Amino acid sequence: MLQIDSLTKRYSNSDVALKGVSLNLRAGEVVGLIGPSGAGKSTLIRCVNRLVTPTSGRIALDGQDLALVSGSALRRVRRQIGMIFQEYALVERLTVMENLLSGRLGYVGFWRSWARRFDAQDIARAFELLARVGLAGMENKRADALSGGQRQRVGIARALMQQPRLLLVDEPTASLDPKTSRQIMRLIMELCAERGLAAIVNIHDVVLATQYLPRIVGLQAGQIVYDGPAAELDAGA
Ligand code: ADP
Ligand code: ADP
Picture 1 (cartoon, rainbow, N blue to C red):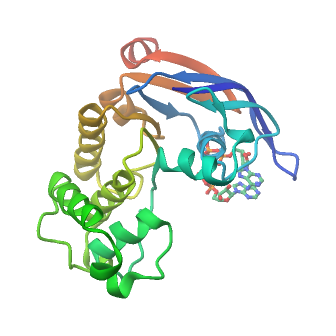
Picture 2: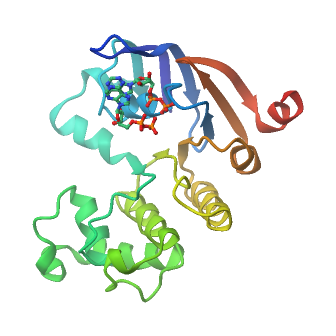
């Protein structure tokens, strides 16, 4: 479903972050992206989400070249891509429910009256997702009253509100303790399996990556140096 061909990114300060990266994901396939800081992991994820414009190369979602879509077609593509962040990117003074509903629209202007402004289907989906991520009954808690693990659960639920087919997950556990990190990785993997979601999980913790992610792509200085099963990476390391 996702095809990345010969992707290159050179930033204006002439840092070359990606040098000819090619990567394909089938529907429902989850890949862990590992590599040292500065390897280009964030840049790769940002190119797929169009936060960063590649210098050359091609990214296609279901055969549709991302560089060529705009307007309503781009909004359709974006809806198919859910983002999960290291620092959760919640609006701290809003409640859990407000975060879920405003995230769906991509802005927070209408948060005060969510019950009137959002359709029943969105609200029902939000409650369903909250229960699924283990936060049943927490909808009226403010984000700033939650633990890190709970915040990431909200971040995961928010990413799923738009019913994406591809998740881009940027260091989901980097701010969490080891036990919570394992719980969050397990939750992400379960949800991908249940919902047939493909995912790119940017993760610097190699042990955690090989424990939960079946396929590992290793990036180093902007190039893919490994692409294969986690088990073989363990053996070769
Ligand atoms: P990683 O996520 O693996 O740590 P990044 O994609 O953040 O790697 O960075 C790859 C390279 O690109 C690094 O040399 C970094 O300094 C550079 N880089 C990242 N973002 C920018 C930016 N916005 N402007 C200029 N250089 C950048
Ligand atoms: P990461 O942990 O993902 O590698 P960094 O801490 O390297 O992130 O970078 C944080 C932010 O700074 C990102 O938005 C990244 O794109 C940007 N950035 C990283 N390196 C540079 C750089 N050399 N010049 C400008 N911006 C950069």
